[in-house]
Length: 170
Image (tube, rainbow, N blue to C red):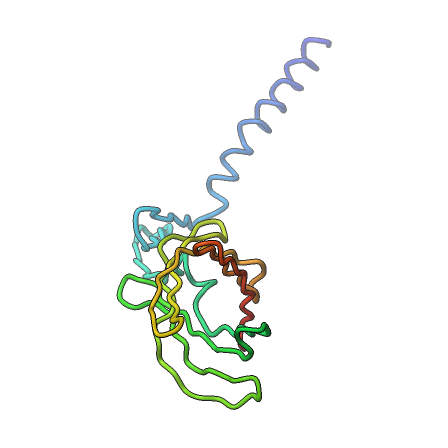
């Protein structure tokens, strides 16, 4: 009697352990395969037909793209600017699109002020362009995406250091 119980219990355990993988394998009739080499997803169904879907890859720079506003209130400069960061070819560039003086009088602009050199893990490096007393300067800068709506731009040029906080314009 003991042997019959042991054989029955063993058979039940073997059926359960052997049956679970088969149920899982046949339970899902559609498998999705992601091709990490490109931007194609293949959907394979049980009827052996293959449909290829194009998937938009978001740019790694997407969090930076858009309009940003920065304000200055110092002895040298008072006012603000709206910058637009966008993809130009394969480069990420920033342009001033509107300038405001201390009295909030505005003027349209389209000056190239920023070029991104690298960006990874919410931090990057670029070239910040500015004019001072009629001279144009290209200053290495660091950027950091503090939040999705705040970007810190900092630079240090011959002892003149500054940090600007750019706020996303919605």
